[in-house]
Image (cartoon, rainbow, N blue to C red):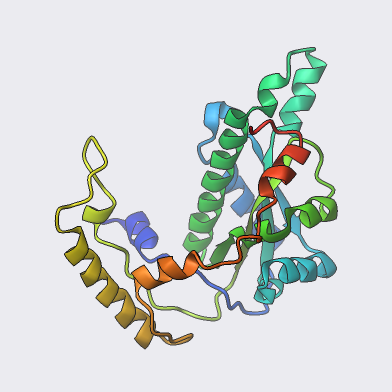
Length: 249
């Protein structure tokens, strides 16, 4: 089965090099509108989007993420888990606001942010744009909260660099569905090791022959490498979430 949307989804790749053409106000509005029409938990619309246009803030974000290429994107969004807006509604109605601070509502905000981000990515690709979703803003959420003047019951979850692509990276091979799609219960296949070995060979070939950033690594080695990050990085996330008045114990 194939159609234009499925073809678009299967051609997704992260873009980190952009032309110097900024997004227009109409393009930005279209992307935000696409996010607004994505699914949202209980229709509570528990997220907000902040457009970052100040070069100084972009530079600080480059320092935080370690990716200064974001400063050259056509536009930069930060997507924020947001129960603060609903807090205002509840307080005006003299309603009990305790549930807005719950872990359940924090998770709901997280879902809303992730779904909205994917909507922006897909809408952007349909417009000929490219993007990268950036979880690396979590490297220093205290600084971002201060930088963006985020109130209680908000939390910055994702950055999103988007613009006109100046590159066309090769598609990364995805793992076989037999390793990630199961029926009725979780069940890795009996030949997991051999299937993983085949996928490691495929990913090693991809990394060795792509157009840039060549390296010798397999998917399994990549996963192990991810585990070698400094454990102090992002170690205070739970404290910052609590600082924002979410009860996540």
